[in-house]
Amino acid sequence: MPFDFLQPQADLSARNTLALPARAKWLATVTQTGQLAVLATHPEFRSLPRLALGCGSNLVFSGDFQGTMIAIALKGREYLRADDTAHYVAAAAGENWHDFVQWTLAQGWPGLENLVHIPGTVGAAPIQNIGAYGMEAGSLIDSLEVADMATGGEIRRFAATDCAFGYRQSIFKREGWHRTGRCVITRVIFRLPKHWQPHTAYGEVAAELARAGVTRPDPLQMAATIADLRRRKLPDPATLPNAGSFFQNPVVSAEFAAALASAHPDLPRHPQPDGNVKLSAGWLIEQVGWKGRNLGRVGMYEKQALILVNRGGANGRDVLNLGRAVREAVFARFGVQLVPEPVIVGGARS
Ligand code: EPU
Image 1 (spheres, helix red, strand yellow):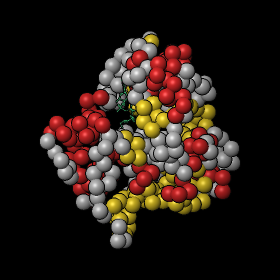
Image 2 (tube, rainbow, N blue to C red):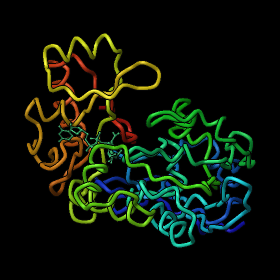
Image 3 (tube, rainbow, N blue to C red):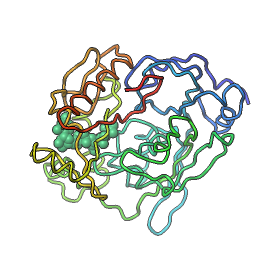
Image 4 (cartoon, rainbow, N blue to C red):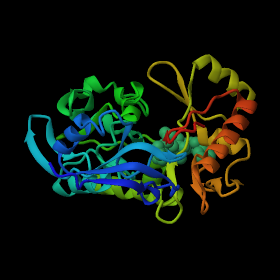
């Protein structure tokens, strides 16, 4: 196999949506799964740290990466089959997430419409089980394929039940396989319902549909509504670099949430099926005064306090410093530990 898919000392600054400066010892642009087998077995590469890279929309480069950054450029999408209840549609890991969602909608296979415009690739979606507006990608994943880098890049299949999807969680993340490059997702198979129902329960979505006088939205109306909501609150990384939500929404016990709510009656609370309560990190950050406030070259976005933005020329250190300041302020006031949502790469930790 030729080695022209490998580039030494590669600049990653255009490969992360926070636009942070960083280099990788090697950048591998993978267009065929056989190249993963080379990285898993070749003596020069098999013991180097590795990390899969999609659009870099959920990464913070805190410094250079002394390993192989694997840019997943596997392409292709196909209709596989149908059964009584669903259409089965596959996409290679390097497909752009939003383009894939748009394509399924244009083909008449709705289901993913609440997840339009999420930056990233299809292969990155299962790792943190991307979610928005009352829906998570994991709920429509049938199965996926991964290259097992510990066994020479052998392709293995995971059923959705093997993936242990939860709120911003999966087996890949829980086991740290996304950090160690143990598994690289190569293809995802979706199960899109034939009997489609809109997901309209999310407060802002319901309010927006009511405002527009729409009572029975079709999939394209849902997609357009979500697109509008996102445009209003979430900055476009092309004009204001960011990595989406910088923290996960904290999930706390019902007792803790009740005690907090008695001191802060406006506290937004979202009971979870397991009895715990999800709080809104954006609200907590706004309460401690960080919404719209900068620290050097970075800041928390003025329209959505959960988004950390690069105001120009920031590096990973700036990002981690702001992350720490916000976490400390929230902990001091509410006793809640915020956990960063993006993966932090390159040595330093927040
Ligand atoms: N809030 C504030 N101030 C803010 C932001 C939020 O008070 O500045 C409070 C409000 O009470 C609001 C609630 O937080 O009603 C929820 O806010 P929003 O609907 O904007 O959602 P979020 O919980 O802040 C999550 C996801 C987003 C996703 C939106 C919409 C996480 C970590 N983030 O944000 O996902 O787009 O819901 O579903 O779960 C991402 O993960 O990168 C991301 C952008």
